[in-house]
Length: 340
Image (cartoon, rainbow, N blue to C red; front, side, top):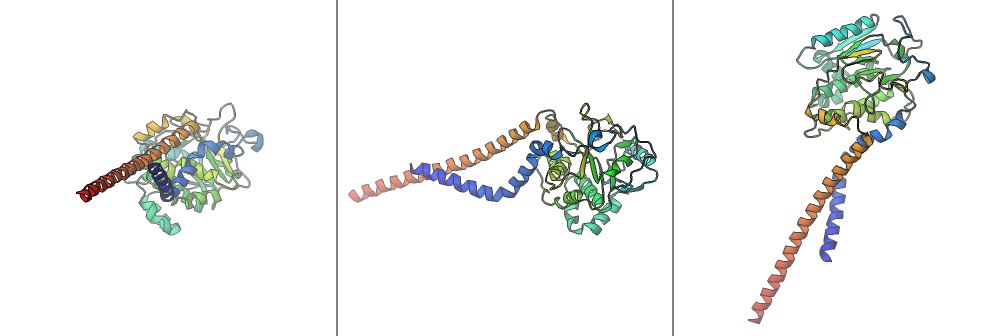
């Protein structure tokens, strides 16, 4: 009976200690893992449609001279390429196609030469964190949020070859394409300067800056990537100005940028140059109900924690039992000595 009380007390104590130690991590995990469960409700009114927005999702109704008045997004086109290696030839060709489709837009190419100076000038308190990201793509992702927050405009991945101008989308304060299976893609984003949501993407970077050991794909997606951006999206108090470019009910994947695809706006080269081995394993579950996948993850994590706690508890009980036996033996020996 005494051993059971000791085990229960130890279990409760360890639970409180572990909860206190890991509470910040648990909060972040909760916010990240809840995405599949809340995304539909968070984004249902944000999807651009022909019915509510009088918008042609095929873009065939918009010619190269189409203009928006008033335009909430400035006519600025951004591309980011960091690292010592020059852009691939096909990426340069893709960017040239976008420049041809936007001849009157102001264009920026962000490289190591001007990116560090930009961060130092506009976000000096984030410079150390930004430079210490373990994966180059994290620096690219974080930089694109900072650039959009300061300048606004459109920012595109290097592997997107434009087929049409983006001008029709400038009527919305923020636009990003839908991602598979949930969330938004950050490969294309349009935003007004000082957009509150983009500001939250920047300001929450330190909070979600964590390395997930042996899981580089998860590290990127949870700290700066699409999953991070989608999670912050669900936390917005007023998501109505944030619009999602998807497709009609008959073809909801019309604008998704997954792999080698042709959408009404882009020819996507599907590079995914930053993906590593764990990405293939994780993406194998893309067509599985994500709520089930994340529920399984929670069960596994909970099981690991429970086994760890019970293991410590059993070890403690064994130690207490040995101490009790040793104490009894010493008392018996003492009694025998006294009798002699």
